[in-house]
Length: 381
Image (cartoon, rainbow, N blue to C red; front, side, top):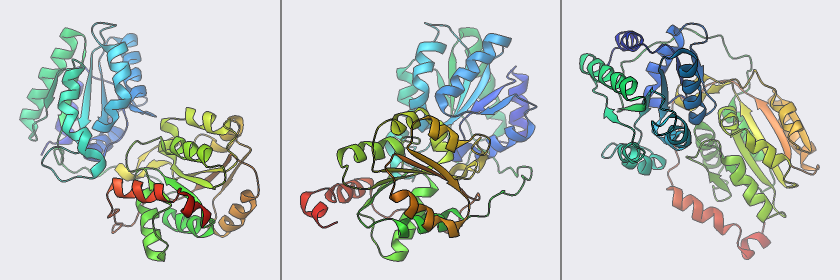
């Protein structure tokens, strides 16, 4: 495995003095190490991967030094536009080093949402003309590879990538963080929301722990999963999926269970949802101030005011709560109000260690969900 301390020092010796990115579970030990050691404002957790590329470009323009951008390979989709229309040598020619976690590597067991992205990751880098190497999983060869690629980035004025396999970095114990300021358990909150919703409500849940906890809640209560669409990939897009459903079926309540990191990733979606006129849309952001599903790295979820933002974006009602005993009453109150309605619920970090995963395939989830919108099903809701 790669020693985080030695690898970080090698990065700095290569002239890289700025780090930006979106956390990834395969890179969580390296990302935690960077968070502890990068001084001052030399490390930013970006809203999305495209923003991280732009941050790296800005740093280079101001200092002449390349930056390191970390991401999961799913984030290459967000990054492609600034990679090819900003940083590419045919445009501005901005050197930077990408560290890309390889979820869904062929032949390695992983979740279904990573299968396609994993299969095409090397080809995608090649297709946009970005030189890449698969990072060796031992310290000395990894440093040799790192130095080679940084030299190529600087000499050719272009982005380059290191693709990182699972378990490449040694475990790192991050410095202790302050306890969560909120005691509300997210899974219990999701269970409370599910119990309070009308039976015909369609629920769209965001990627990560939120979808897993909703699935577990339905299994425990025996209420079934047919009216839940689990957005196991496409982080940041759950609210727009929910909006598309709400506009097509104004007679059905539609609920989006979102996360703070996901809402921040594509915050413009709030403006579209808020001004949509979808009276049947309830958008709930479960805010724990962290990228909980990939290592618990900090977001700015507690440093921005989601309620004021939602209000400014046109939601008819925008409110916040942080107590479970007020949840049922609040849901009943806002259910009688025309939407779009926005509710922020501030919850604690963390999930139970034995949290399960959906046992149904994504296409099975999709088919069962779509069946609830057939005339016979709708008539019976």
